[in-house]
Image (tube, rainbow, N blue to C red; front, side):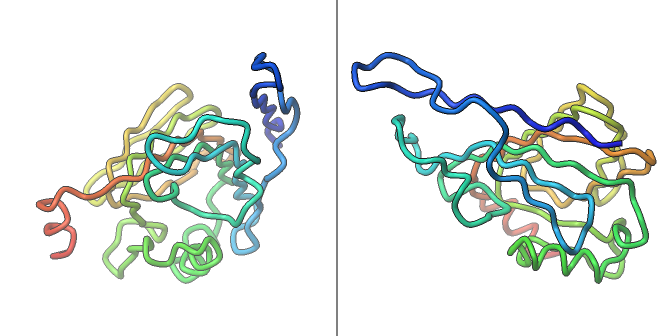
Length: 190
């Protein structure tokens, strides 16, 4: 089963300051990963800096791929997860995937990890399950997510498991963050 393409509308201003639709159509940046066939990132938008500059700048999704939100910025994307397979549950394959995403530093899987895709980002990630069923794997527990479930990820170690046998789609809004010093010390000690 394939999921429908994402339709994006980007607004802006014309030379008279009138609100217009600058773009209205499919996303220009949809990324498949060689190391994980079926995992697809649909890049919607990103902002740089806080507060972000509101203007008619170029499409930021056309630049180099980044897994995380930009420093002091935000990112919105959809991610399609294929059903778990042998590749998806193999820690060496997951390491290659994180290398391909240029996010090796966020990969935290160890021999005693509860899932081979364990990772963390120093950010707030709001995840909304749009379609399918996904399992949020944490260090000590698992939570089943269904359409409409919202995860507020606060820089914690986690993984996503798709045990449903069907494709899933999650919407993520990432906001660059900085660990509280007490949490940073706890994480460093693990």
